[in-house]
Image (cartoon, rainbow, N blue to C red; front, side):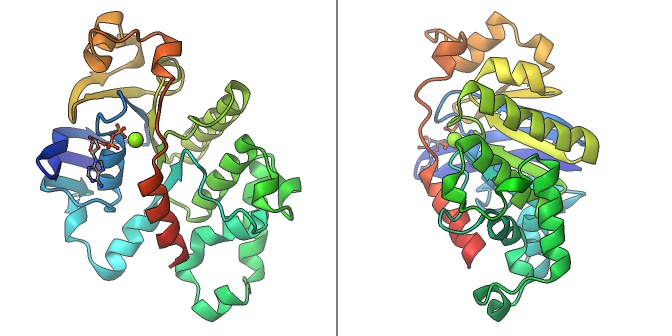
Length: 272
Ligand SMILES: Nc1ncnc2c1ncn2[C@@H]1O[C@H](COP(=O)(O)OP(=O)(O)O)[C@@H](O)[C@H]1O
Ligand SMILES: [Mg+2]
């Protein structure tokens, strides 16, 4: 259903994403790995239409994302929910309202300003929180929660949109190992139980091997690996991370910068 054909994105004189092609047919769990600057975030943002391709095409059921306008563009964006490293919750707002923000663009301004949500929506938000094991956090301010809980709230907000695809940009990069596992298990469950496609930018090989059906390795904007986790050999890892890289777990999990520009843009869109 997602067909990326020769997609390129140029910033200035640099190709952040350089002639990338692949297709994803079923509701797979796909990991995208690569060094910082490899083009992972740009590629993710091209998929949901936040960053238009300079050339090439991103086809969804045969329709080019770039050709979607108005209601069709909005519908596509609500079908691909995004999750970020820094959660992007409204810190001082309660958890259930943060989850309801997943469907903000379907509500009128007055309703939103007055925080008037239909009862059915509130019930659904609470059910999603319950499913993710954090129902008891519903009345608390988001900022009072641990990082792992906040990321689960962000996943709940994504599920509120009832998306077909979840695009997760370094979803566990700010979490300790235990919370990272909870969040990855949650994404996997959503993938398996709901049949939603999950595409996650991940910075460790280990996580990619453990959770993904398929792994795409990027280097300098290009796809240098596309295969099964079991095919991620040492040689392949060297292609992805560079010959000089010490690509064991500790090396590939360090120095991942926060994707602030994407975070701010997404937050602005959510609140618009
Ligand atoms: N909005 C932008 N303006 C200019 N350059 C950008 C922009 N976004 C990303 N880049 C550049 O594109 C390349 C890929 O960035 P990015 O997609 O964020 O990589 P990754 O997510 O793998 O770290 C980097 O060289 C980055 O500096
Ligand atoms: Mg990134």
